[in-house]
Amino acid sequence: MAPKPRILLVEDESGIADTLQYVLATDGFTPVWCSTAEEAMRQFQAEPPALAVLDVGLPDMNGFELFRRLQALPGGSQVPMVFLTARSDEIDRVVGLELGADDYIAKPFSPRELVARVRTILRRSSRVNSAAVPAPVLPTPAVSAPAIWLLDEERRQIRFYGRLLELSRFEYGVLRMLVQKPGRVFTRDELLLTVWGDDNDSFDRTVDAHIKTLRAKLKLVAPALEPIRTLRGTGYALSEALPETIS
Ligand code: CA
Image (cartoon, rainbow, N blue to C red; front, side):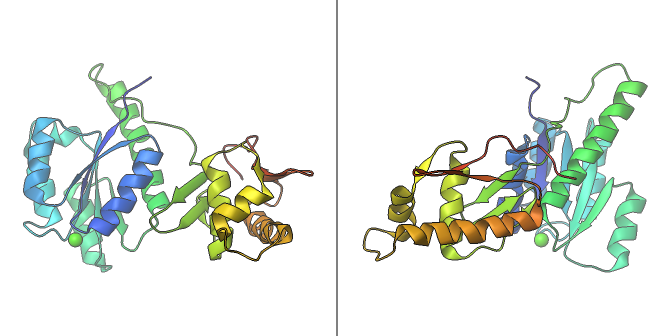
């Protein structure tokens, strides 16, 4: 198996960094998070990453300056770099791209979108590198499709083919259990006990009702698929036969 491409993530807001690290790791990358420019330069010197994501507003230096300095380090000009910025004005975009950044992403952004762009840039740059120079060639970026399910327990969110599902507390609880073990059959009792707790006065049909609304929400994303299987008389399981992508 090819080594996972290392992505240097320079971002001082830990909330954003956490989300990005999670999504990158889920997608087959190795994120390396630094919250300051100084730390980023150290990391970069220790081992240049496959790609760097630079926040423009850093505490010790702006991202543009950091970009210039990283470019000047050994191997720096070969590493694709993407700017992240909270400021939505065009100046940042123009400055970033004129400096030679590979892309620019304005906050707020979807983590999925960022990962998709990282993937595209890496694919593009590994093609260019392998055509121009025989070695070294960047490690092959992971080309797996976006995860079918993405569970973010900290935010209590679930994405289905990249789309964020709007779930009630109990819908989230049920789907979370299924997503954690695709194919595993959960009985109604198990779901009731775990999601609703044992002091509930709910019934089997409570589970059925939530499965029904969940299915409706999943249909909005993928109308042709049946992600939740019913095992008559037993319970429910997440289908393991879903396509990797939907059109
Ligand atoms: Ca910042």
